[in-house]
Amino acid sequence: MEEIINIQEQKIKEFISECDKNVEKMENGMPETMRSMFTELTFLGALFLNPILVKRYSPSINPLFDFSSDTTRFFYNSLLETGRKTDWIINISTINSYMADNLERAKLYQGYGGSKWIEYIMQMAQVSNAVDNITVYYNELKKYTITRAYWLKGFREIAEHIVTLKSFKTMNAKDITEYVVRFVNSVYMNVTKDEICVDVTQNCTSYIQSKLETPQMGIPFAFPLMTQLFQGIRLGQFMCFGMLSNAGKTRFLIREATNLAFVHNQKICIISNEMSTEEIKSCLITSAINNTDIQKIHKIEINKNESELQNGLYKVDEEYQEQDGVRKDGFAKRLTNDNGEFIESIEDYKTRLYETSTEYRNVIKVMEWIDKEMSEKIFVIETGIDYTDNDLQQLIDNMIFSKDIKYFFYDTFKSDIKEIGEWSAMKKTATILSNIAKKREIFIGATIQLTDDANKINPLELSSSNIANSKQIKHVLDSLCLFKEITQDKFDNYRYVENLKSGTKNQFFLNNNSRYYACVIDKNRAGEKRNLLFELDLNKNIWEEVGIPLERKK
Image (tube, rainbow, N blue to C red; front, side, top):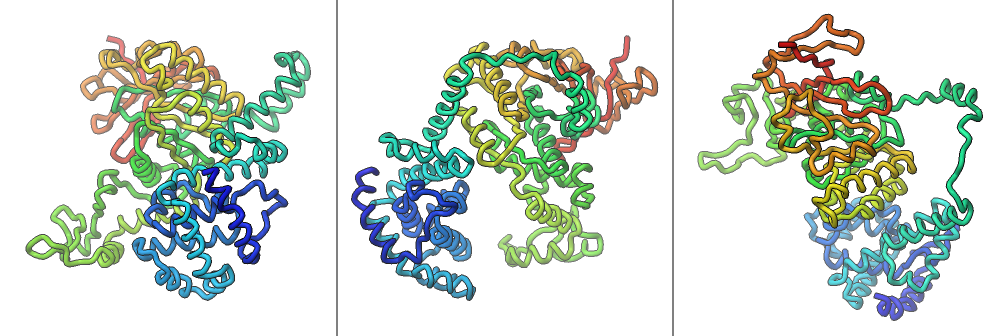
């Protein structure tokens, strides 16, 4: 890569000099060393040569940050939109056709050099064999992106120093961040020379009075009693939710994440090593449709199973039940001939469904609300299982820095890949996460798996000893909630009261048509350790806190 850059850099300067109107100077007075036009143009040229690469890299490309000029952003966005409109048939003809569709776009296209510009960068990519080495150019692009980001965030001297390092040519984006962190830490160590010592007996009056202005109560959970007990979701806290395998850990986490994002307007990051992004998105959509707290925001009252959403099943309104294209159970179906072949286009089917199904129209209205009002609220990162504690810490730091996120959910909490199976490793990872939460002033909520032995235990007798791999992590957590289903054959053994002050008065029976989970609060640094009872429907991902469970004395 270094040799290629050295060979081509002079040609790039000549090209920029000839077409200076196409590549403007850096914004905000940023030095030219904060970018590599060779990398941007060659990477972009490779995408034009092989448009399938656009589909591969578009989820992780942000043109506003990854390209340093309006020109490169324009051509990248145009390539992306042309591909989407032509099913990725990209050539000069289809690009020119796309440009001609809009007068303002066509003027920009010609002003930036038109097809001559595209042919030039494609030639650059061919000479550099960029398609075969696309990963190298992508990593180089991101290296400059992160360097510019630090410069814009106030680390100007550090960023300008980094690009002068001899090792910069071989560094990647992660190396840049680690360098900045080491530099900042070294400044701290040189200045303090010792641990910070604070006299906590000073200014107690002003401390109490400050709570009148900024109470310590955090953002409410989706559940009122849980909010009372934990004083809400507070920054600086590391909290775990434990359940048996396949009991709904991720679904509970997503239920809470959607409440934080959609009701309380907070940015969320979900770090997942089990569920895929698509599975999380499906559950998120189901939660937004069905739960009443979110329905109050989007104003659509509807109940819909996730399985029906995933399979595109929608009930037709009663007045259209006798028409063609309706199943016996009332769900719409696409028209077919006697051989089962579709005779109705998908676009015609969508139109008919929108006209005949109130249920479908309501779902679409909720989706449009999410698209328009809730953009960039919930981010998901799939990590797989092959990652270390350092990777996890770096990931969280990057999301704090790049997206300004303060609320993180980690599913499922596991130890460093190098130490899987060692009980002490889980405690070590928990300690790291707890420290991150406090130092960065963020909230981290993590799901954790219970041992198979927990199957044999009464739900209200769960404790940290039932945590798989490490019961020691309780000591470093701020809060720990353990969930287990109360099976229907045990309903007669339980009653519940509706609030924390009810005592044993006004007890209610468990409904035989419902599903219940007991929640044992095994640790709570904010207050009481009381048990909670949830009524839920995992098909709709509805979780409702109904009260305090009581076990009947035999």
